[in-house]
Length: 507
Image (cartoon, rainbow, N blue to C red; front, side, top):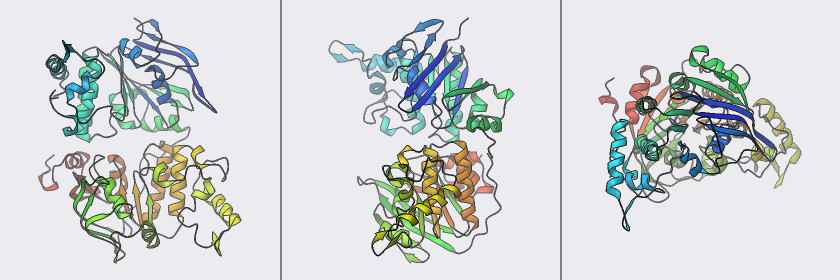
């Protein structure tokens, strides 16, 4: 019996980049085949080819033993191939039924036949234990249920080859367990799944086979029984990687950051942070855990002067900096690693050297008598490139030409290489490879051990738990509880992320 899906010699080049280099991949009936690789390894390009968003330069695709021509998503769907993207393709103001019907609308005369569609959605939901109300509005559903709607969209179109792109990126641990149960139900009904992820522990748990890409090529295919997380990380990066964060117990000192009864709205005026209070002390890491979208972004922007505070106070080193300018926040000794490095952390068209001094360009030794000191700036850049292991052709290379991991290292080098008393790191390892993650984690711990107060905000629960000394959990704009990292479990944090207060957690 042929594989349900076979890619043979898939090759795709973009200007200056060979994204896929003669890739072979098979998917057997009823299996989960995980696809691993760093950013830029070629995973997304390969899946976009399979889903008809790109045409391959070379290679062939076979579906159930028959050669297939896929010129667009409609061709893929007609062949039973469906894809759940990392960023959901849903319209918030429409119902589940209306979202699922989009593009394949059923009509009764000139009217949409919502009832027939809703009945079919209900059948699919019951068959695969998805527990979705066809008449619920998307905007009222938590992200875990929105993801189920995306899966229903594929099943409604009779897809049985499912591509799940980073499906657990925005889920709590409990929602991940539910997703895995749903995948098992899909397999039992005859579906086959390509599972794209960077979470090695989840891949080891859910996958039947694992293929690793590096530099656009397949470096190996294995099974969980034949490998380990450490071996997979080494295959992805090309060297051994330390997956566990190695740190001594914290030695906290005086309070550096005091936040009291803080209220912040979004830029559109909606309440985002509601009555939040906490402290961060010198020499400790306070991690903020929570599913993305529960006020973390607005909290960080308010702390760094990028968003106005509605009420409450922020003190750094005892000084009131509520609604102070970003320049003032910098000057009192705050470093900021923003969650969106390209929008808020870098000037992409500027060279690496100039990105290193974005917040110190007006100070000596980089400026004198109103003039930039170019030789000093270049020498400084060469030192930081070496010290922080930034992989770049040169310090005059535009930072937009660097990989995501190296762009992040430019920000870390800039923020960590000046005297600071508080580090605010928001999603510091989002979208970067395991090698760069290892490096940045080491640098954050090093800063803590030097006596810096660290506020770490991350939607990656493993990152929060491994780096933090204390953990504050945010839900719906509030802090549900603050716990010691070494006295709490993933399951307890997961319940708090879903809105269960600390005193009510029972595991």
